[in-house]
Image (tube, rainbow, N blue to C red):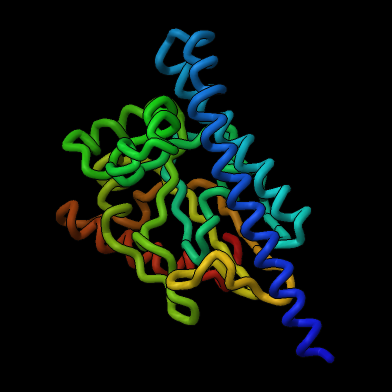
Length: 259
């Protein structure tokens, strides 16, 4: 009997997942071709337009997260969530266990810049969103300067330093890109740890492979900190980036207590 109940629960959540991602796609089209063009009319100033678009994305992501909660796909326990909405120019770095991590985190922010794949600027579904929101293409030759400009305006920049979703059961292994960026921009960092159990939407899984019970996200948000005590005494930027990467590897493990 228990197997039948579990099988039915998984099937119902797979249907709910299909509904939610369809809803997400429709919402993206509405933002791209209806709401954002209206914001362009209202906000002629580029900076104000970017911030208005980013706030709309964050609010939309929050609504989508609540919609998934209502469908019993997920539950959330976010510790110190108010730290995400603090106006503090820094790089937010988080581990990346699931497909919807960026959606969940941005849903608790009022503003968030992102470095996104360059091909998204040619995707008909999201190109207007990433362009008007001022998101930064990852292959831009002016990447460092663009990030410095955003951070100097006390804006937050979200990065997942692993580069892709964590393989379930494996430790967090950060690439050095985020650390190099923090060192070059001489900016603070804010670490966020995400734990999900039962896990779904992980690397290699399909959107319809849902567990029998809701995904439970436990998210810990640290205070922004200066990177200088971590990299102090480094003879070169590359050495500083290696030290900072080691720090991120240890502090982004989901079982690390909030500092």
